[in-house]
Image (tube, rainbow, N blue to C red; front, top):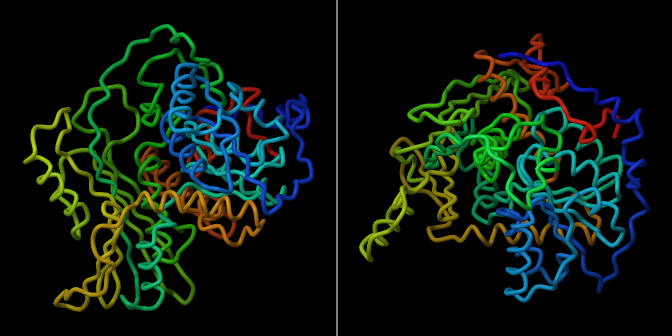
Length: 472
């Protein structure tokens, strides 16, 4: 692996391209009255951003006042979708910096590709706006730390988009773990078994009409346009994404860590690769990760995580109910598509001295087995709807923006940053082919300059003027 030097972060501030030069220095926050609605700007509206639009529009205390996207084609579609849904017509922007200059906007929701997340979040905090930021909150560890610092310096409400923390089943299951249902919980396991077909090879081609590609690249180095490096498939390239560990897996990493009751790990190991397919993908499609924790009083815990990309078994009944539903659907007629009938295995397993617990995203439920005979224990049953957790997560953010009670956030950015650190440590270990040791107190990689550089995205750097500043 080659490591390029970091591209001048300090020069960004010295050249006056910081927030003050952009006219975005934070003003005093206006106080929302009991009848005021939180005016939200949604940035990145093609896929997950549409969920943002729907959830904020359904909340009686918020409204989507603006939308921002670099693809004019997506913008036209979303405006039509909003009109059809009966939502008020929003302002439209192409450049997020113009959004942040709009004094009428109270909060920014970020659903762009990963490489833009932290930068927009930091700029929004500096502009005096609260932030709902999609997972992972950062493309690398260093910019995530800067985002946390900006959150605290400007006293912003910042919610991380790990909406599993708003799931009633997850919250009840975590409460049972804290009450000692499983005894001494020493191990958790996160599962991201998600069918991912090959992306094939995509040639370089002209930028499609209506796409503002320079803005899309933003902080990343310039690269010729290909379809595989654009909508959605950007997840599988290191310049922009973090593989499925940082895409779907961050949700399960977060819950597995929360239930285990741990923070930053001491040692991380990850092995895997890109199997089966001959295509453009850079990130691994199969990955095994282990996070080791040395806790006070000599106690140790471990978090395991696994990414699989194709046909697989389920574990601890996770995914089994969805398979049953798929078989029932199949009797009603043929389904189309390369992956017709496939189902994922997405969830977490916790192991303790008295038994184990499985949490399943589809349906939103948890199940428990106790004792050596693995007798069924308490659980919340089958059939929960995870979409309710999704809406509840946005509602929690709006409530906190209005109350200014950061302590009521279910996924505060500090917690999101810790979970994202696990993702970045594992990806660094995979890319370097060796374990990475980490000091939880100083939050520093131990005696490994190459790993430290990767954690700071030193193999990519930042492209002016889209630079995460040293001082926030």
